[in-house]
Image 1 (cartoon, rainbow, N blue to C red):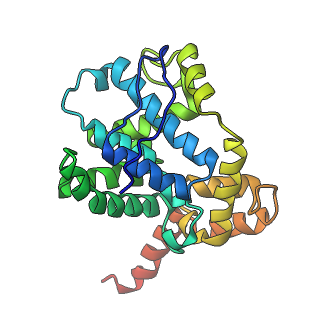
Image 2: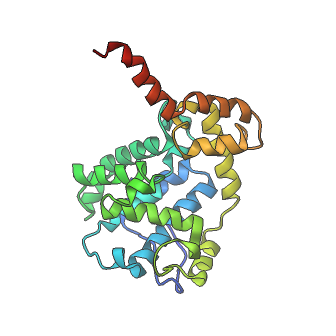
Length: 258
């Protein structure tokens, strides 16, 4: 476990401070080895936005029982499925599942040492909570109806894509707060990097993309982010259309009906 605390910028406008506890510090050192700089900053911005939401967004701010440590760690590690180290990720799982598995395994191993330094205890429930938060972070229609920690994680990640335009009541993130976070943790070409990465998933493990938003990137931008292989990918998605597969399965079973 790394014992050297990371140094984060102050956020006087947003009135937040990044976590500095032993487990977050250790997790930060770990992800820093496996994220690109753009991905790392995206995850750290998500942590920062969660702290703003905890301070200002009533459904989160008025709930004293939310496990904020679990949210912070989920946000920090939510894109470990994008790890630059191929040995960490799978060839047959969605990147969200890879990230959830990597995070849970890391925290399970590190939590014992963190507990020795007065860190929180990580039982099966907390580990599963973090797994769910990461695995569901691209599925708001489910995440927003699970535990508050899962909801908070998904919402904070959305905040990095929408900033002051986050579509929730009260518009809790101001332009000034957004600019402060972005100045400390710049995008560094995140949009372009994300497009290339997601299109790469469509190319390298397409079976994990046809039923979710990642496939939409392949349909629009192709397999290289520039349109290459788009027609073939669209055809494959059409062949694997879930409505057709379900109805086709039922049709095939009609022969057994009495």
